[in-house]
Image (tube, rainbow, N blue to C red; front, side, top):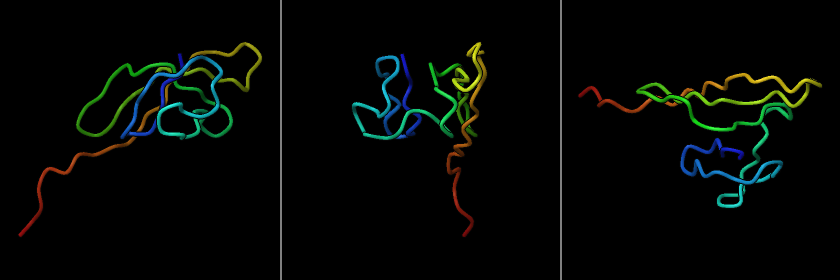
Length: 75
């Protein structure tokens, strides 16, 4: 499966899909990295298991998505 990287979507898509079937966002980052699944998340972002499609051996790698949550504002 291919994981959508859009923070408002995050739907799984069939392998080799180019655009998310739910939101329409492109699924391959920098024409190279395809997210497979979320492997962790916290207050500052998410980590995805991914595959490097540029290299012939298609090794696994990670994508770190910086996504801070607002904790409040100064007044």
